Image 1: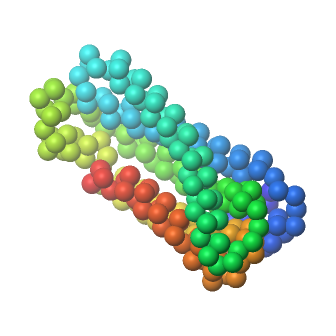
Image 2: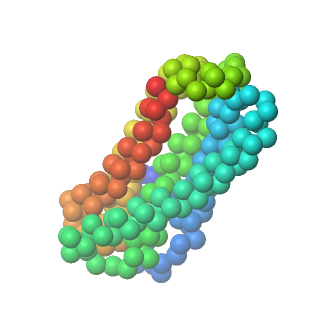
Length: 217
């Protein structure tokens, strides 16, 4: 896999790849690494957030932290499958032709920007979260949404949220750029139709990631 060409010239990358035998190995590795990183980040952020709970609840919350990490890991592969399904279905309306396995293969490469972004956001998140003071709240305080929100703002400062939001926006545009050419060659579509096909799931995926960030504001 020529990562440089995938990043700089996805049109040429998929144009060359479409003539080769379908292989899920390389996109699987991309999504696997992405899923591992997002699981690690989810485990770390959950561990930090759960410190606001009383000490007697920490043993139970440690289990929930593991569940959160496992869910995040599985979520990476689920996102890959759903995006491939949505693109494949939408492309049918434009007369696209080609196997779903090819669509699944090519959409997997589109997660490379997300993988690269995590390599940036994880160190940034660790820098902010490792230096924050986290007060343990009583059960009465935990039942007060205003108090909980104030503490969450201390844990996740606006600088961190805005930085991650900006990176997330850039990644969404990058996803769209790669997925447009991915579905163009996977389903033999015109560029305009490929763009529309890629736009819908990309926007949904991007909005979901954005919601995950701004809910802390």
